[in-house]
Amino acid sequence: MTARGHRRGAAAATLVLLALTATGCGGGAVAGAGGGASGAGTDGTAAVLPVAERTPAPDTSGRDLAGEDLALRSYRGKVVVLNVWGSWCAPCRAEAADLEALRGATGPRGVELLGINVRDRSTGPAREFERTYGLRYPSIHDPDGKLLLAFPPALLNPQAIPSTLVIDRQGRIAVAVSGPVTRARLEPLVEQVAEEDA
Image (tube, rainbow, N blue to C red):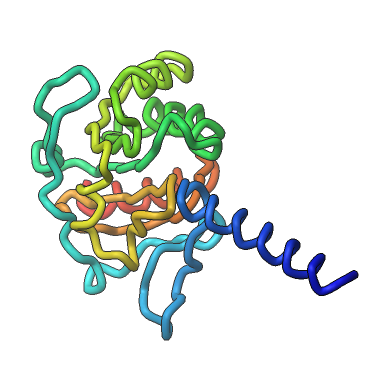
């Protein structure tokens, strides 16, 4: 291959990486990355953080997809599965049915699901996403992703969409998953947090 061919290949690879970074879809850190500090795991590596290592979730609030006020603080006393998603994100579509099934299975144990919809400029595509996948939990509309900046970046990277947090009954982040989730992996973690102060 010529030098010109190598440069073209490198340029193409760079464009692909930039596109993935721009969409922020998928990917994520491995638990314990960054010198062994607790952080976001993937669906296969996430674990419940010890209570002493948990940080309070920020006071997240905004308008839901129907234009009503919605705040994370109104869920205090419940375990909250907080999922960051966008209608444009293929891994978000892949995990949607599992999240709705998780909602149905864990609701009787005091678990609530709450979404943060990001980068959908209008609510139309996000509402269509909810209808298509039968989602029955609310989501705060955050088109610019500003709400995500208040979370600890080691636990919620604004570029890693989807991401999921499990917030304990005292409002602390107990589990952080970067990238798509499955019910099979997430439900045992949610149940562990739900049993702490049940």
